[in-house]
Image 1: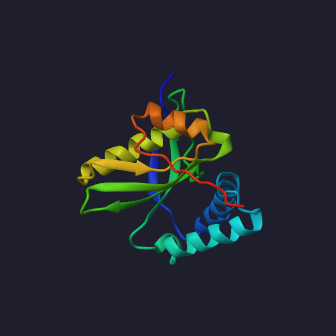
Image 2 (image 1 turned 90 degrees about the vertical axis):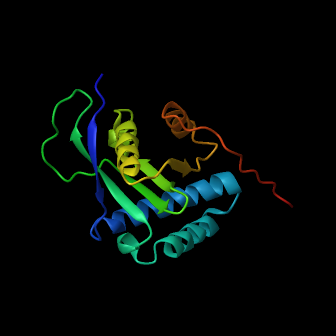
Length: 168
C-alpha cells in the first residue's frame, strides 16, 4: 500500500483557535490521566502551558506550528485540491544543538490508520535534514501505545522514562 503524500504548511491565525481548543482538551486529558490531576486543574495547567509556549499563538517566533495537508491518499490517488487539515505538528528547533523537540503531533481521527502520520514525520525529517537539524526529540505518554508503536517504527528509541509518585 503506498504511503500518502502530505505537505506541512505553517499554521495561520485562522487555524489556531481550532488547534488551541484541541490541544487544551487533549493535554488536559493527558495531565489528568498520567499525572493524577483533577480535570479542572489539568485544564488550567494546559491553558497556562499553551500561553507560556505560544504567547503569540501561531505567530510565536521560536515555535513552528504546522498543519498537515493531504496531497495524495494511501492508494496513490491525488486528493482533491483542498486545505482540509489531516492533523497538526508543533516543534521547536534548537539551532545550537542541531535538534528539534516535537511538542505535539496529532492526526485527526478521520485520517488515522491511513499513513498520514508516517508521511508527516517523513516530510518533517526531510525538511529538517535540509537545514542541518540532526536529531528529533519528543515525549510520548505511556498510555498511548499507538503513538509509541509509530515512533518506534520510525526509528525513535527510548532515552529515559518519566516517573511520578503520588504523596498522600
